[in-house]
Amino acid sequence: MFVVSALTLNSMDALFTGFFGLLAFIVIYRFIRYITTPLLKKIGFYNYYSKAFFTVPIWKNRLEMHMGTSWDLFRLERLDAKTQMFYLAKGLAKLCAEIEQGKFSKETVIYGTTYYFSNATLQRFGFRVREQSLFEKFMFGLNYLELCLLFSISRRKLSFVNTDLVKVAYCPLERLVQNKADYERLALRMSGQSPHRLIDDNQSDALAA
Image 1 (cartoon, rainbow, N blue to C red):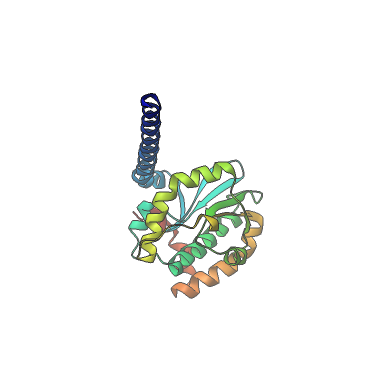
Image 2 (cartoon, rainbow, N blue to C red; image 1 turned 135 degrees about the horizontal axis):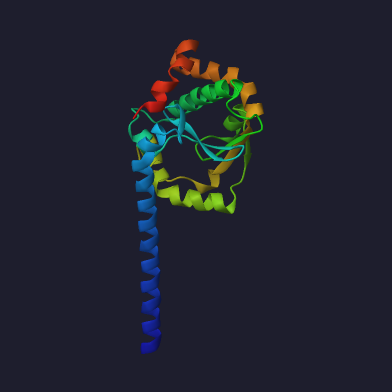
């Protein structure tokens, strides 16, 4: 009995140690991501197209898109579904302008993990949807606690991300640029800005901090 109890206690200790070790790793990882955001924006590794939409070059012909980091989202006055839609449309319109200027190969594919846009909305934006890979699920797991915090802020109540809604949206830039006019119309309708303001304020957005 004593031996069995000792083994059980050792197993529980190992379990708790592993759990808190993993939790500490996640917290440190997210904290580093948080404090390095301004630097990564300044050097252009995070390429911002609106205050809450940026891309990261992953490898050749691959761009990863993000709807802001915790650094950005804590500094925004609003973070509701309408605001996210505006920043997405505005960011995609500016990205399309750079595609037209030849800054990217049209063979490049842009993709990102999302849980806050429906499949129908993503398809209207020109994206296709697939399930996460095992590695993408792992990376999402590292971000889960922070995402729940930001999701709670946006909804103004304690909320948890429904993992059943998580998917990967992707689109070749060649097809994305065909929707540029739709992105511009949506962004203008939601903001009341002129077309020139929509494109020309890219630098102020990219450097906002």
